[in-house]
Image 1: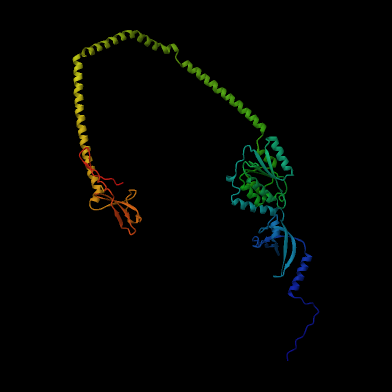
Image 2: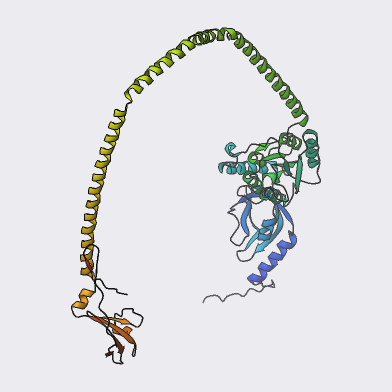
Length: 486
């Protein structure tokens, strides 16, 4: 027979899965409430649709899950990136749904300068590939700006150095946009300042700068990191106002230096690039004035020498007038003899014409004029008779046409013309009212009538019949039979 099962008695407490998970969670959170973990970010694909970030921290032999809540991620100075070695600060907790423990990160920073340099180099390659650092897109600085905008801390020594250097070289109007140059939110303030200066309208209440200077004093790579943020670099690259980057000392390099139109090793050097030296300009202007005056004097001396040479080459006045004088003397000597000869010639011509002018000649001229007048008169009479005949023929044709188109011919064929009391023709029975007085014209006269109600007019003869239209004879023998329609 098989052996009976043995009942094992134990005094260990019994937990449910949820109770055990809650106990482990309290134990982990109480023991590791605040920790700093160094490791490499792995599995980061950007924020989730909810805004939270999920990834892992790993080293050579272990890995721990990590999460950054949405609100914390928005306030972070350094954003997590795949493969970046960081030091994360947060607290450990467990996730009962998958029996895992994880770190809820509250702050994150690169693990040393090497990590920052690697991140900076990677970001530089990315922005350069977009063309933000191309020399072709950089603008020339204005030679003498009227207004200079400065983006920097209002309390540091940088702004005092810039103002002092501008005062020494060439005083200009300066607008300062105060910002934080390091720490949380500094990158956003710097980018907003650059965009703000560009948004100012020309001729507005606040003048729009002709040149921008983004400046900060020296510091560590971590202190200067705000000027490596993408938001700042993109703002500098998009600026329509020429921009000088003056961040740190000569050995400090930030990404804004590559996007700016000009890089200055120091803020003081940026002020020197912005304006020329006024005293040197005065000296140069005086030198140019002296050189211009000396050049003008040389030109005048050269022209004076050329004028003297040209005057020596010209002939003398008496030489120019010698030949014309001889011609004048010769002509004046020949003038009396020429006048006498001309007078004799005209006298002979007058005598010849006077000899031909006799009474017989005048009579012949008159006779020829009379004959010409007679010919012209006969021609005019013929033209008049021909014109009159043409007019008579045309008039007869018009009279025949008028008779053919006259309404009298229609009346002769037995029709009548009905008019109202005002003498206006009526064309339809619908236009006639009952009791209306009518005037009916026949070929041999007119009669009056009154319209009855059924459209049949009642004829009432007049006391005196209308006289037939008189017939007149025109001057050319044509009878006018055209009547008057109106």
